[in-house]
Structures are given as structure tokens and as C-alpha cells.
Length: 210
Image (cartoon, rainbow, N blue to C red; front, side, top):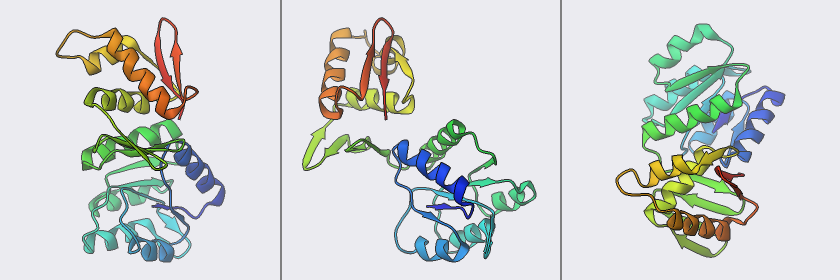
């Protein structure tokens, strides 16, 4: 859940996170955040501190008192409130204006520390690396462990080229790398996601377009 009352800033963050494969529920007030928090379970809270009818620190304080221990990142320009936010159980913060790539890295780091299942969306495919499954419409695909590691690596570096050397080190750290197996894994992922999603950069490596 994302709590932010600034419309322009909120739209920027919401659009970026959706394009990055996350499902975003954006609310704009203290009251809406409190109501929404009891409607469903969230993987992450992104909170602004200054809101028209309250503040993000009070939201987090209420969550923690009610045993809602969802990882929380503050996005704020109010430096003086950060100490209190950490006392209430915040996991991280970013100062506005926010660097979007840094935000993405911090979200991924907080989620990993919290042991949250790695679910994300690429086009029309829902990816769950914890259960090693991909869901595309009514079709379910089961990934091999190395295929899942490859997809995770491409996802973490989406939009950037991942060299074959990096892939070999990640997938075959305890054995001799297999170029043939890598080509098979890439071909299968291309078949599922579409050839336009995974580019072969000749002589260098591969790039995932999320």
C-alpha cells in the first residue's frame, strides 16, 4: 500500500512501480490508509509522513500496535520525523525527491530481509519464484531451479544487460557452466514471455524488458 497526498508525485511513483511489475494500492489520507489496511494483507507499506488528516508515523504506530508487521519504507521531505519513524518500526526511508532506481533497490532489499515471497508481473505473466511457478492466463508453468535463478537475475537487472559470465557464476557456481543449458533456459523463457521481452545481446548477454 502506498500512502501519499501529493498527486503529481504519487502518480510518478505509482506508474513507476506498476511498470516495474508491482501491484499498487494508492491512498491519499490517514483515514483511507487505516481503512485499507484492514481490507487485505500487504507485502509492503510506502508511507509519506505529512498527510492532510494526520501523519505517516501515526499510521505506522497504529499498525505496529495491532501486530501489523509489514515492512515499511518512508518517502518524505520531513527529516525531523525520521527518528520517530524508526522507533515505531520503519525499515527504511528515502528523502524526496526520490531516485526511482534507488527506490526499487531498497524495496527489493527490504522484501528480501522480510522473507517475503518474490511475486511480480511481467506483461501478462505472474511470476512466483518461491513456488517456482509462472501463471499465464489459465496456463501454469513449473520452473526448474536454475530457470528460476536466471529469471530472478534478469528481473533484478531488468532493462540492463546481464552478461553471460554473471549468469554462469550465479547458476553454476558449484559446477562447470553449460552454454547449451543456458540457451535452452532462455528459449523456454522467451516462449513463455514472448521474444520481445528477452533480448539476446550478441557476444555480451541478455536483457529483460519488463
